[in-house]
Length: 177
Ligand code: IMP
Ligand code: MG
Image (cartoon, rainbow, N blue to C red; front, side):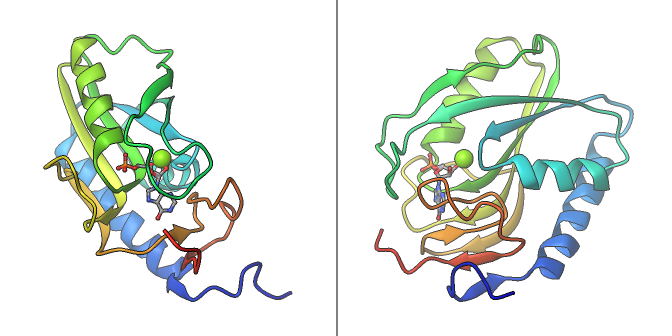
């Protein structure tokens, strides 16, 4: 079976697995004795969160939120909105926001504000990819899988117009940003 895309592979499946295991170990060490809420950002984080939580030994709860900003395009509209809130009560909780990629930082910034306003006791963030070139908010994830400068990435949850999320690796789309 050929590749779905023909796009160049940036991070292959085994490299992702190794890094996710390392992230899980770091998170386990920091959350010892706690029961954090892993709060995934739909839709892109679903694969990363599924793999990360299975490498973690820490007891945790899992919930999802949805933030929409792209409107189907490849550049952020710059005005993200929370379109689906958490089901769990985050008041007093340790919350670890799980996102597949941070780009401008607008999405994570919005989420951090919302989660703090819900009374969370502690909020940290983990991003599989830290994309640096277009950062608008000076925000760095507490845990980062891989750092890239630029480029539109697809696979392992990352989409191009909702397709290619299921690639078991991360590729660079040739689509213009
Ligand atoms: P931010 O608000 O600009 O940081 O963008 C965050 C969201 O934009 C991510 O959660 C992704 O859904 C999407 N995004 C940013 N860069 C990429 C990319 O290279 N490929 C696919 N989605 C991306
Ligand atoms: Mg996302």
